[in-house]
Amino acid sequence: FAASKNPTGVRPMCSILGVFDARPHADLRRLRPLALSLSALQRHRGPDWSGVHASKHALLVHERLAIVDPAGGAQPIVSADGALVLAVNGEIYNHRALQDALTTAYAFTTGSDCEIVSALYRDEGPAAFAKLNGIFAFALWDAAAKRVVIARDPLGVCPLYWGHDADGRLWVA
Image 1: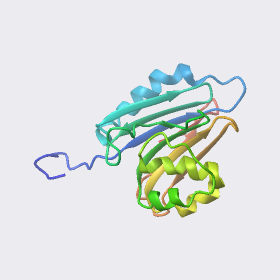
Image 2 (image 1 turned 180 degrees about the vertical axis):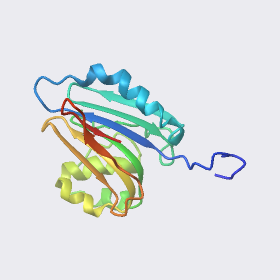
Image 3 (image 1 turned 90 degrees about the vertical axis):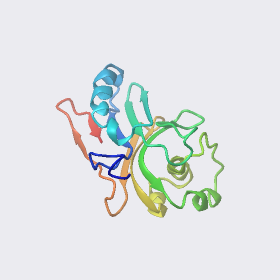
Image 4 (image 1 turned 120 degrees about the vertical axis):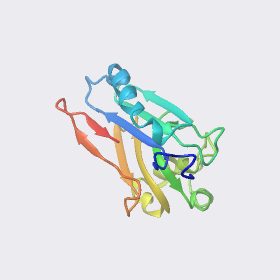
């Protein structure tokens, strides 16, 4: 962005916020207003779209800067069967090659470069994330396994922070 269009000097990028709690008694839906207000503090990073997914065990909020698939790549991205929910900040440069190399069919719901993360997870598990070429930080919720996978690019171009609150819930941003 040119200085005249961006007087703050801050380069917009997406942001993610996630809260996870796999315990049987959990119900994170009541934290939705808090998560939305916290995510709004990062809205300047992703001015094109705000999205939220709220369930008993996972709450994901995404502030989007639309680069790839501006019309249909809204996040969080929910898999066609509803079992996987993904929020990503970044760009996956080799998503097309990875999509062509999948050994298991995956029903892509967007044209986003980021959805390859869910497809790789379904195809090969988290070990496949080593194949990702790009700058990224993401949180992937597997509802069936009640499992969250968080990762960032090896160089840390996209920052990723995580911690637990006093109630034992995992927070990611």
